[in-house]
Length: 386
Image (cartoon, rainbow, N blue to C red; front, side, top):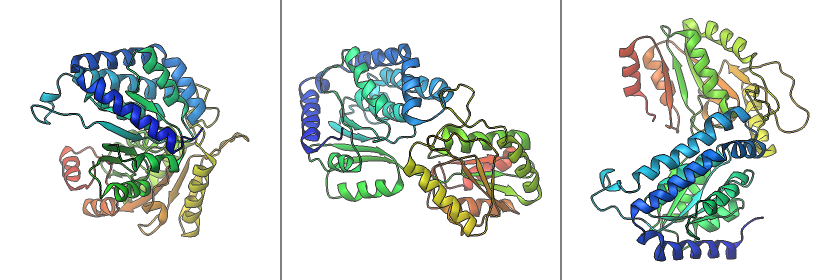
């Protein structure tokens, strides 16, 4: 069900009432106890959450089980410990809560992104209204049950479901004190414009086009493993995925060949199979965008290579893909694909590598592969990322 204006009004009013009457008056140590309870319940119900996350999102069960759910619980444990220590967190001697926080999370790490948003907000004394992505609402709804199980006071956490229209209504609600958003750069810019004339605070975590730079003195086998994990983890649905690979010219052919051999070993298929490495693309809409951008790579002269694998007939799937012969002008080198597609560029000198890596509107993350510590430190200082 999609929340309408009346639903959003009710959620915000409930959050405001809980903030005014209960949560803002509760001692920080007591707030922390609720977060500890939530963390423990997430651990106790970890297998249930892992299965629901994979069914809803399409990521391999191994990733949900070993990464997403444990980290979600860890975030609540971490922020529970900070609840009564905020005066030592570098935000002043008497930190004050903002009030009601509107939170919008993406579909790539549903429960983990929820924990990133809700745990620190509650620890700081805020109440929240959170909207999960329309394609992955299930673990957020299950989390609401966890809040009830933990005895969290009514109204402290409110979950609403819906699409972009619902999100826009939440952003524009007059009784929201802050917006916390993780998602596309385009939507993030729209949110910034919407709240520019208001007193609302905002935290916007947006897209990326991370560059992995491999210098000629790098340990190539180790670099290949890091590159594969960096782009194909979670089907490439990661904002800091290493989707651009910059190779020094004299090792480029060797690295590409080793990459192809390694990609041929990636197991694509049933996300519920614990042996699966690459699961399903989250939605038909996302698969369409991945394919459209990949097709521009073909049209603009890059060479495509995809691992040979039998894709399931039902659902949305994309084989691990690498493009070589890519230039800075290609769309696949400039735009976030958000899928299992790697674009390879080459460079001759370290200075050229830095210039190409920084030639992007993004600056979320980057990677450096070299056996020389001095070169790594030099490159890290020059890169506009992180």
